[in-house]
Amino acid sequence: MIERRTLERVVEIDDPAGTRALAGALAVAARPGDLVSLVGELGAGKTQFAKGFGAGLGVTDTIVSPSFVLMAEYRGRLPLFHIDLYRLAGAAEALAGGLIDERQGGGVTLIEWAERLEDAMPAGRLDVLIEGTGDEPRRIVLRAGDPGYARYIEAVPAEFAALAAEAAEAAAERSGR
Image (cartoon, rainbow, N blue to C red):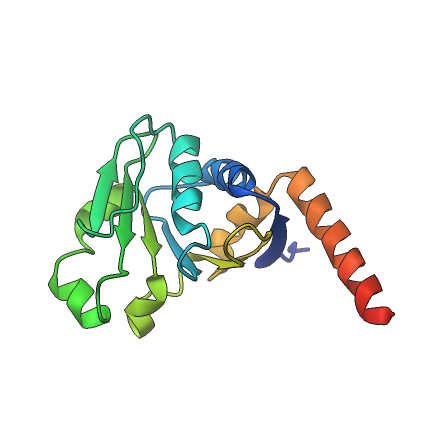
């Protein structure tokens, strides 16, 4: 019998440290050639996620948002290519600028504002959709684009799964009143 793998998980996070911790735990599942798309409003925590993911890969450099340089490369267990598309209009501009190249096949590529690549994104990726900004808790949806990325969903630590279950129960109770 073939085990059905879950392709989505929702996690509730209270603070930036939680976002970094979740991302660091997910980095354990990273393999060469992986693509992680980060989607969320300005201030949602995409760069916090990148910092945690980098730490999980063993990156010791300070990870900052590459908004002005568009891509930063870091050394860790796997190379980390951190791309920020905030200042670009769309996929054509990103592709023409050479932000996606063959070097990334040897590492992990994290793309902030990935929705700007539109249909140019391959199905094989992990989508990280971050809802919430400011001091409010975050709802993070992890979605594997294909079964090969389900390993990220399976890497979510039990304490995050438990927190998500508690948050879902609380929301159900509030809506039932």
